[in-house]
Length: 304
Image (cartoon, rainbow, N blue to C red; front, side, top):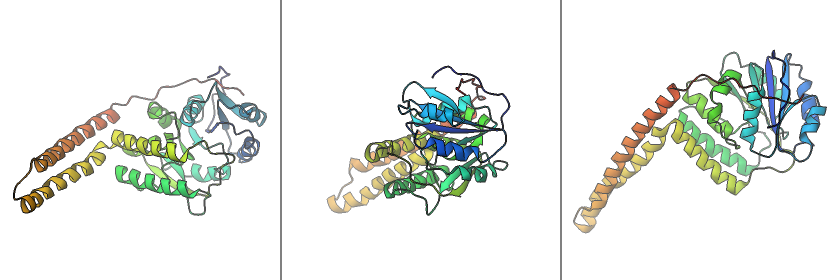
């Protein structure tokens, strides 16, 4: 990341916008953000290796810019923005035109009561069918893991404190799955999360996400994250499956073959092993969360 000047030390809100080749959208987006008049606010655009002059466009529109020398990933851009931010509250939003800046005050309004506020895309949002179906599946899986009704797991539009963002910074991946990790980390740690209904728009330009490749990879990432934060909720159904299979196989083989087979013993033994692994993993996950240290202060440099 390129060396840049430090910002003013006093700032109430930092609006962080990661971009990759979004020069066409940025002028209007940033004008709408500045028009909100939120008081002591800084707008940080993180240019993730754009080749269309996004950084220069953002600077000309009055934003501060953090530059990556090459494309690292959406999550990496968000992390760079968090390190550079000076505001006590952080607003994270996409730079592709999906999120309406006018919804920011709605999210900030809830910041006094909740640790993280997320803009949940409601009915009427401009969302492709395949993305809507995938989000529904992700929400169901996350709700099961966290025992909390997750309304929009993948939404990148959210408000949280810089202190909490820094405390989970090392957990966030460099990819588009950072909202998933952040949400599960907050819920697992006992922090409060509030969903505020918003209307999203179709993104400008071509999506950087591949339906097949990134869809499968994202599902695997969610499973890994779920195993990291609530492993027992993942191990338990697998253990139950083997237990039921082993238990059911006993009468089946007896009535069809007049004997018992070793397959039932194998399934029941596997069930017990997976159950015990789930308990051990759950304890390790609890210890890991309890032993997390205090957030580290960063001093990123940015163009102004």
